[in-house]
Image (cartoon, rainbow, N blue to C red; front, side, top):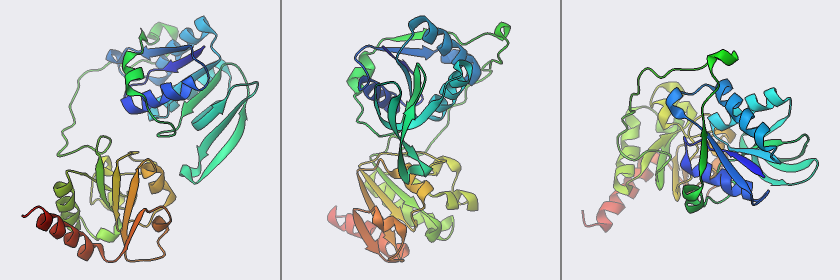
Length: 293
């Protein structure tokens, strides 16, 4: 039997974790934590520990989200077992053989995972999600450990909805991103114009958020948002490993950069060598022309 931690902050990654778990066995049981109590990783892990001890599963799998990785790390500490994060595949056995993403997606590591149950998280977009299977899966909801157990808990005092304009990064079918080459916050006007014409979300690189040109919520990358659009248009982005870790789920990548030796071109399906301030407005103009606008 395989226990899957039903971490639902990203339903697609949760569905991917279920598909990943099915590669280890057919008997899947999903265990979730009542979100009404607020996120407290140690308390959530204690609840998951209880469910794990009741079932004695072969493995415990969680989505490769921030919460999934953190809760399973706590669970590993409680069980005194190793945890393998961001796995792309796993083969049952003693020890379990796993392949996982390392160094921001720049390499794959093959490793042996000792101990029972095996604790692992599935790397984002490593397997195709089955939304119908996820929707039909019954989730056993557990209450997090209480303060009486000596574990800190969190009480939610207020919920505030985050207001985002346009399409959100995680859900967008097309994303247009700008990097250091955009030059300034004002320079993003051409990026926003193209995104509006394509019904796309606007993203950026870490260099942009570090410069204060865009908020962190717009950042695509290892320390930002991981995306999987049908088309990713990267403008003035060199292609650092950390950025590519965030957009590797894109089905197609179009790179616009004046440096023909930029590392992003090695991953691009479409390469445009040129100044984004000339290329991007030209693309927008052609789109308007094609639409008769």
